[in-house]
Amino acid sequence: MAQGKRNTVQPLSTNYQKSIFLGRYTLCQKISSD
Image (cartoon, rainbow, N blue to C red; front, side):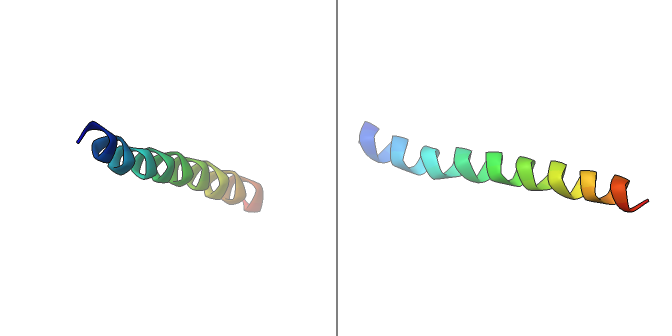
């Protein structure tokens, strides 16, 4: 049960980090385009 829980949390955290990274990237692109 604990292992299954960890498996569901893991991809979620990586998705979170990925979205943050993408958000920062697009923000930098916007600033440089201005």
